[in-house]
Length: 447
Image 1 (tube, helix red, strand yellow):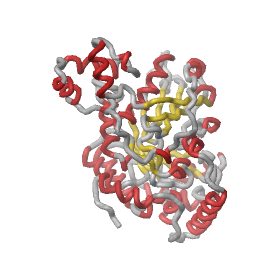
Image 2 (tube, one colour):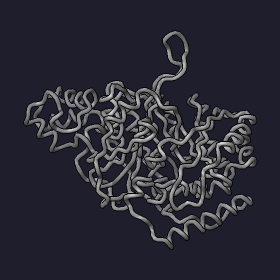
Image 3 (cartoon, one colour):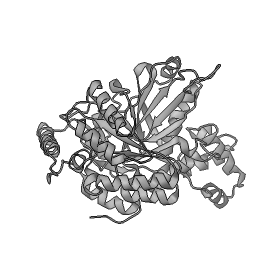
Image 4 (cartoon, helix red, strand yellow):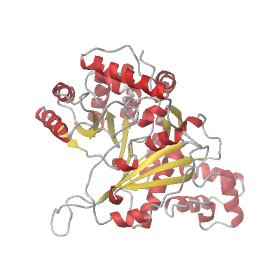
């Protein structure tokens, strides 16, 4: 994921609080194939669970609010930080629940303090990543008022690893580990909020664009969004949340039926099926026209503009033909396109489009009547592309495997540029994992 902004005065204070902890290299996403069987996390509990547990243990119901206040008002990270509880109750809570589902953080700061990449170790050793991006206030909208207010945006993960296998994404090389629990999703946010608070800042936006495909873990993602937007809990507000998908159509349809008010983002990356088959292998199951049709219905039903993410890859998806195809595909829709130069990813033969080429592409799409924003890369020196830190921990793949992967990618992309839909699939654990989870996204498998 990539975002842009210029350095500001707040950077120094933020970078001072981001001292990293070292996470040993022994654990990787590939080691974490099971759902954790530890106690449930306090931050992910459904309504009434605490009250029921307190009743079963002979404690008064008002203790539930004390515990929630500790988690949400005071952002408790340890049992000792649960306020107002007698020692025996605090010990009982700690035995039945986890105050924090993240065991360790390793924080890397880049861009002069404006970007913080965090590698989180979960209770079972799984590694996931989040990225905190700081956008200082800029411009003037009137006396004493900035045109653009200060923002602090966190990009979070919904799965350990990913089954979709996009070849320009480092997470795709890891394969799929497991779905994250609701508390494991929410605790990424609490960790970032804790670091921000020490510098006098608050989190303003959350985007589900980290590791994993959110709509293949949709129930827990929806629970996490509800918790984050609940005024009694994190109180962020749904309209400050973006949920991204690479095109799980049943999941999009389910969101539309629910009338979700967060922003839907589509990781598009190509407007033509032959090329999108290569860049987003999920396209073989739900082709691009079907994905955009579902997103179009979602926009009309909710009144919320859909954001389309488009990673710019030199000589692959940045041609005039691709720009025209994108403009035709989205013509007349309530849509906006974000163009993102590709972050360098190991074992991929591609490079980011040049700034000049990105500008030309953007102008051509705008000429077709589509709103476009160009995002500059953030945190390249911190490995800001999704999954890069976790991939580093997983170890270097064998040279023959890398060579084979590159050869297949080159052949498939060359065929796509000729307009051919290749029958050759990229190496990766796509089919089984996606088939297994598609049913849980809200509808039957299409093919």
